[in-house]
Length: 111
Image (cartoon, rainbow, N blue to C red; front, side, top):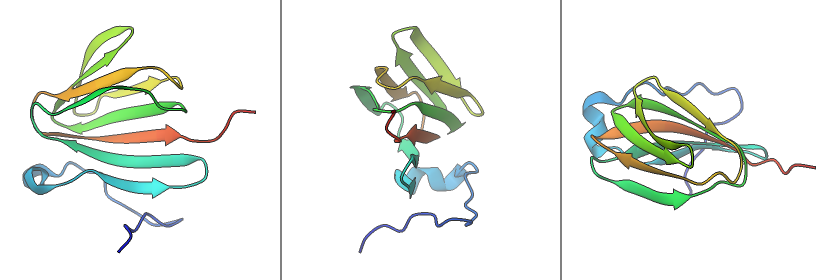
């Protein structure tokens, strides 16, 4: 069965998962023409090796602590922290503790 995504006008909670974080999985919340929104779940020590996205992205740490590595240097994201990257900017992530974050990706082609 295909994963259901958020429908236009539907309300979805992105509050911290708390005790449910241990069993949660990364989940795409929205895949639309111009935007993707994903709640990533990273266990302590888990890493996403260097990659880039074709559009601008934002990452908001919802809970936990995440090392975020960009050409500008290594930064620590904690609950409530937010970062923006230009399109095609390389980055990598590593969870220092069990963590979740909300990732938005602009997928609209530039004209």
